[in-house]
Image (cartoon, rainbow, N blue to C red; front, side, top):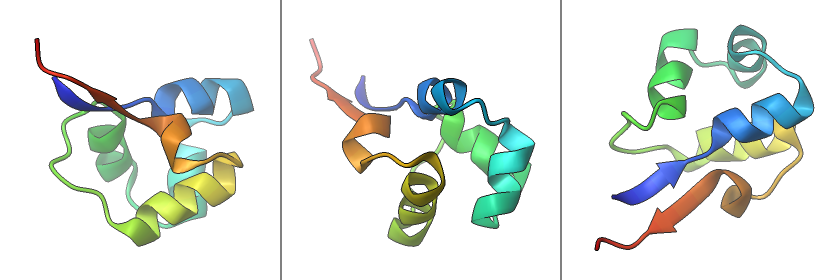
Length: 69
């Protein structure tokens, strides 16, 4: 599988919705949804930093590496 984004888990723990988080980190809800649903091919460090700042977490809390079987 490779890299998995677990942003939905952190959003649920912090009780923040997609639209609210997107507004706080200044990206479109559609782009945040792409990231949340593991459809993104890349993420900017500035976006990752903003997500971690708003969710009060570390990058490793939302990004996971899963080795191929």
